[in-house]
Image 1 (cartoon, rainbow over the protein chains, first blue to last red):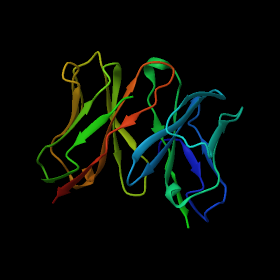
Image 2: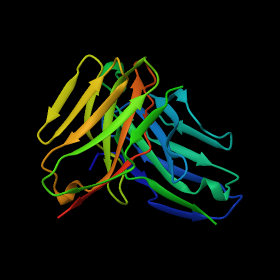
Image 3: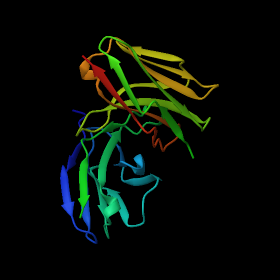
Image 4: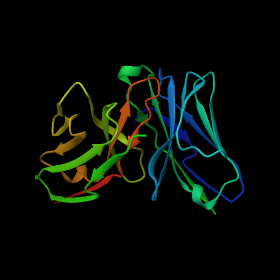
Length: 114
Length: 113
């Protein structure tokens, strides 16, 4: 167990809908990362937050957004869902110190868009 | 941006044999190289990592080597056991405030009893 928690574990929804995925980082970690894992694209970085502020953006669609709250948990919002958004979404956390950062991954949320 | 290539995509070994997975990276500024193991239905689990100021690192049956000149790094697993069967991912990242990982495409390792 990495100490990173994600809810829900599974999510089934329809095209055009909006969903919110939640992540709680390990105790003491200030950085949260979101990754998408799909069969055709592999594991891809989406976005990073550090202590409530956006730090870096990767291949994140405009329909997707995220935030990190004062208690350091993070939410990833996916809107206007398409079939191709079906994937595993992982959250990872790290202490946030530049030279010692090791990312620990949560168990993921499996999103199925029908 | 960074590009990480990983080979082979599948690897089958007999229990007790060694397994080697290789990765190359494109960005010479990358200086952090973790390896993750992902079992079915679970998130990636860090098994070992190496930073660019070190050429080799070992942890029991697992070792990683890094060749900065050639821009490649490898994972070595000795005395493989059936529980080593999983998908292994290499990754690379650069220093700085944003340490997003760029992952390889993964290697499905099967250890045959």
